[in-house]
Amino acid sequence: MTDRPQFGVLGVDVGGTKVALRAEAAGRPAYERTFAWPSGDDPAGDLAALDAEVAALRATWGPVGAVGMAMPAITDSDGTVLTWPGRPSWTGLDLAGALRRLFPDVPTGYADDGDLAALAEARNAGHDDLVYLGVGTGVGGGIVLHGRTVPAGASAEVGHMVVDLDGAPCDCGRVGCLQSVASGPATLRRAAREHGGEVTFDQLRAGLRDRRPWAVGAVRESCVALAAAVVSLGELLAVPVAVVGGGFADGLPGFVPLVADLSRQAGRPGRPAPTVRAAALGGLSSLHGALWLARDLTTTGGTGSR
Image (cartoon, rainbow, N blue to C red; front, side):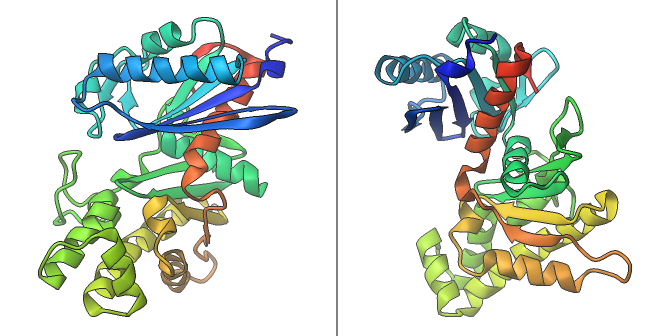
């Protein structure tokens, strides 16, 4: 294992519509590439596309000594995908086996994208204890305690904390999840109802800038739900910091400060709410977390889930 770090590490951030890759090595410029999944939602086609991208990376940048992958799918202990609403056809896929075939010569691991985002933000900030909430197409999240993601062997499904038992349906099949209230699509749907027509992200951002009631109200409802989650996580875990990231949150001015204000107001004597900060890594937290996973594997070796 002593020769692997010189080859660098590869992080892969898998999404429902696209995949980001970043390879890093001392003394070499980083390699960055984002590509869209093929149309058709076919696991074989998806894996072939990923294989082609990895082959191109190796041909133009060089070998890697370890690979970390950030995944939004839920897998079992053997590495089989149990559910992934973003790519439904992956259900039943032997992800661990697929990774062994893609990367047969190096240690490879995968973990929940929210957990890895939390790990990257914690290490970037030098915090051993924090929670992370990533607001995008869904709401992901992760928990870091004593420098490690928890719970061990499972993902922290922050986005599926129930905040309203009589709330809107979530794509997981339940109602009232944080994701069903605070995700980007949920916020846009509320804005559309109030506005009387479809609302794009750019229109929402412009409406928020101009203080249009339909935009302000839709965003505030999301921020209220996120603040409730932050305060509840603070009560359970006594963490000092909550990081809010993800592309949707990162792209709306004032979004994270509003979550911070609402969380602070909801604190109580003797147990203030965690301090809310914007993700330092923006929308790249999961990708950098995948790189950290790969770095860890250069010392521990092995293949499988984190």
